[in-house]
Length: 519
Image (tube, rainbow, N blue to C red):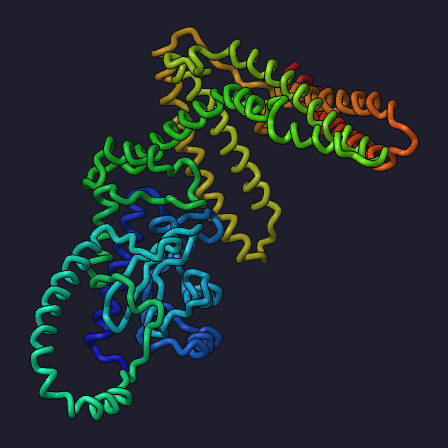
């Protein structure tokens, strides 16, 4: 690393500085805690250096790894990076390993190249070429570029190809005079290889100057072309449809952008979206049961009847009768459940929507109240964990302290969101309220509603057991396979009943405890 010339070091420092600017932008957007950003330079221990050498990493890449900023949440949270990728931390050996095969396709990256992000769930990776000082943003599935400004390069390439075609025409005119020397030239060309090696599958990737790409990423966040999150770790609260309007509303990226106000509005918007989804649960349930229904003249039912008609032995006949009866009975059970679901849906919905528009503030308030309770329960658990930790367990202590700080901040944000939502609900829906069921505050779910669901599920399985036992009485002695199939299904439902009964007994105790506490 010490042998790198000053101009190359300047290029690598430029990459590190611009990555830091990206991380700081995400912190301003309230996506990252500034305390998670760890600036370089970082020490490189002997084990890590040995790993770098085992991969023959270029000194430029090793030096870059030592000066890059890294994002380390300390186990406090899981976050996604650009376009659903993961934050890379090349102080961690597993990230170094992943960086050598960034797309999990056994295509090893050249030692002078490195990803600046790691692959998330089938999305993009930022790749830096230290020789060209260029960056490509590649999609795993398509293999194409997800760089919003890559057209600059493509247009330039088209111009170069056009100029190249003209040069080829001139060269063709001169070829006649060079024929006699051609063979000798070919022999010389065969040995005149580039000592620098080949990039393999990465040599065709569309890239641009590194500084332009990294500055553009900052700009894309500023212009909301890109939004923080976007991967499987961020959670619904960072969904684009939730946060993008809030950034615009609160004046991002201007200097007076209010980060705390954004978090409060984000909590409210996320609660409203969750409440809307939950309010339509009965509609979805009815749709699911309707989808389960099978027409009596469907291809599958026809095949079952055909199999019965072609049976040759008593055992084959009753196996076919079992399969046909079970399919028909399943349909009957689903018809009954569909009727119940549609009746419940119709009692609460208007024009196919369970949530009345004028009641939206009440739904949001109810959800925020439950979200606040959830955050408080999490804080209480962390405080208990912190008190249980020995003073000597320094590293664990530090992690819990970080989680405590985050939990305290989230409780404060959700408290403000709840108060603001409560004021709006009282103003827009005076005299109305939407109570939460027993247990939601302390346990996180409605004990009464859960008991009702368990009771229905138990009764459903009990009904199946009764029906199967009644059907089984008609089986002849020779129908051994059909008997086994029927008994297996009975055992399955009785196992379900046993499990649900245990859950119900535990909930009954919780219900009794809640009732005694409220007396």
